[in-house]
Image (cartoon, rainbow, N blue to C red; front, side, top):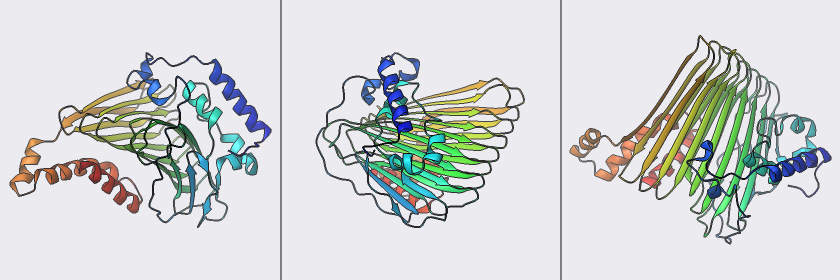
Length: 407
């Protein structure tokens, strides 16, 4: 963030800092933290030391409307390549002043600083992405932010704020990547998504850290009347990763989809806590997360559909399926429903299974080597989520990344 920020933004940061100092430390005994120790994400304890720079990571450049790079959380100037008229893409720290009227109303509105992890990010974020799409504008090319870690800093922060006004549409990619680092690097990221009436937003998070990185990611989207949000989270890299996506159906006819794909190997630990909350009648949500687990990795999925009073006609689904590839790998799935309204249609399903021996035998009997047969089965299992990524170029990249882990 720039050294000087507007007074209003400094006041908020100071309030977050005071709140962080007053909040009790997380112990790991809290129900919400029983699977991932807060200490593993540096949410307690001393400031982590920088392990030392391990170099850079190369991310292939696709065709983008704009791109922002943040090295160890420090932003460079955004590359504005092919933006429709009226669309704003800016570094969030600079936007605090340059676009105050747009940012001040929304920033911290969905993820504030009432809890310790949120307060830590609000008090310390260094840079981030701001995207504003005005009413009726359809941005056809995606905007991308790339947050990288080199090991030169022990802790990095990032923040994204996206506002899509009535009848507009956009696709935004938040990418997180690094080389393998020699010691633990802790990352904290926050994403706030506002989808106006009749608007459409696809937001894609690609988490592909190298070994040594531990990441706590928070995402919250608010979807207004007749609007559509598609949140896609792809988790492939990092030692310990905890992702918390929440989608809120705030208007009648809203459509919120939280989609996820993960592949954990080695000693990786991934936790996804995914929530859909319906605050308006006649709204739709679908939580679909699928993962493959191998070696000694451990994954956790916690899903919850929340329908408070006053949301009749809710149509909501939640599905988590896991494919365990060998003994020693483990997946936990915990689906919940909290329904306080009549006349709703809600369902949840969670499953953990192994590679089907009949499927494997069928392929082997036709001359397919065992490793290739397993690869085909895993890719087929994950395809349901991959097909929901609208960008063909990104689908191809993700398929290649999964195949590399399988090899």
